[in-house]
Image (tube, rainbow, N blue to C red; front, top):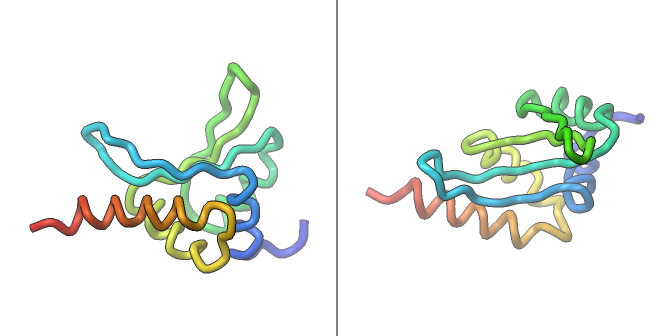
Length: 103
């Protein structure tokens, strides 16, 4: 693999990622990158300096999970480079901002 970049990570997220917002007691933004081969997720995690990688036993896929403030920070970094999931990330950030900036 060549040098990692935000552009590469955004492209990877557009194809293999998911953005959602949890509404439990820890309500917040989540970003998930999914891949069968853990190698790329390890590289992304190292580059970003955050997130946890999980392996799902039922499907054998690995998932890099970013949550809450970390997800918000990374979403803002990736936003200029996103294409497919750009609007979903914008919507997720808006939900986060609306929930966490109320007096």
